[in-house]
Each structure stands twice: as structure tokens, then as C-alpha cells.
Image 1 (cartoon, rainbow, N blue to C red):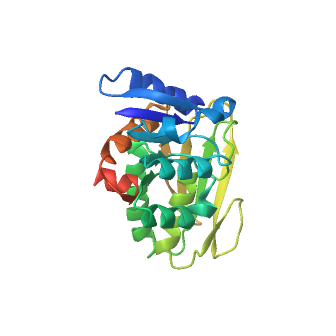
Image 2 (image 1 turned 90 degrees about the vertical axis):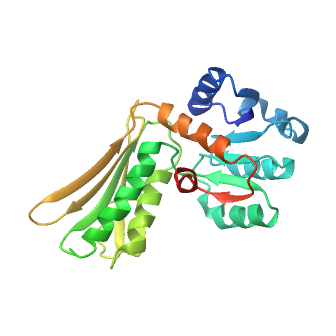
Length: 238
């Protein structure tokens, strides 16, 4: 595949390194804030797929540019989700191909499944209060993380009392607390805690490096070839 990398920070460079080591793939375009003018429809249309790991401020424009170029796009940027339904609707109406994931790590996507299973069990034990803690590196621009938001939304969908999440510790019965921490060199830790007066149950995922995210994004780019529609990593793994 010929790949366009939209966003060339730490994730973009990790992706580039992995793609260079793969004889079946080649990076033909890499774009960041310093060379944004290189993202022309002519250059982009030569790619078989684009992988988007930029910033919340540029992701939306990059996604729509891929639609205009008829290039399947795999999106890992978070922080733009207020436009989620708008993007999904346009993707389907224009018969484009897009795959969004809050996290491309295979381990995290298994963690999503375990979260749903545990939540289903804990729904019958209302003496336990649930909360989420997410810790990332100090350069992460959005809070809470997209992964934490997906974990929270999956809990809220099944929980008998939780109606919303709040990005702070709170004691509202209808609100799920997400605590965001930023620490130097932390790749990503997500902890779900169910606590009662007598004990606590914790489930945690910790990323050791960016390779898991990058490998998942490449797998998604391979999978989306020849398809139209709006997809997630759950579609890939199934």
C-alpha cells in the first residue's frame, strides 16, 4: 500500500518506522504543521490509504480532505468528537471509507470488551461506585483521553444510574468520574475502579510503548481497502 501520514509527531514517526520495515507498504506523503500546504488533493489521491494522527484542531479538515480525494482514512486523533455524527453522516452519504478508533492497540480493544463484561456483572451490585482514571504524557492535548471517554460511554450505556461522565472527581449519583493525570513519559494507563465501603475491584491497561497503537493502525489501513462505510476497530477484530 501507498500510505499518507497526516500528522508527523511521535505516532507519525513510529508509523513511518514500521512502514519502512514492511516491504509491502510505502509512505508517499507525510504532513505536519510545518508543511500543511503539501496536503493537496493531487498528492493525497495517489495514496491507497491515509492514517491520521494529527491534532484536534486539524483532524476534521484532514478527514474531509481525504473524502474529497476518495482516499480511505484511518483516524486515531481524539478531541474532535463533537463533530462525530456530522463526520459519520458525510462519510456514509458520500460513500467514503473511514475507520475511527479511540485506541488502535489490540490490548486496549480487548480491554473495551472486558469493560463491557464487568459492567454487565456489576450492574446488579449498586453498592459499588465506578470511576475511571487515565494517565498520559504531558504533551497530550486533550483530556479526558478518547479511550477513557469510550470506556465511560460503554459503562453509561448499561449502568442503571449513570447518565453522563464528568472530567473530575464528583459525588453525583448520575455522573461517572473521570480523573485525568498528565505525567512525563507515560504512554498511557487506564484504570477502571468499582469501590464499595468494604473493598475495591480494579481493572487496568498500561501501554509500554507506541508500537501497539501503530501496528493496530496499520492493520486497520490494510483491512479498510476496497470498503466503503464508517468503521471501528471492533469491525476489524471481528
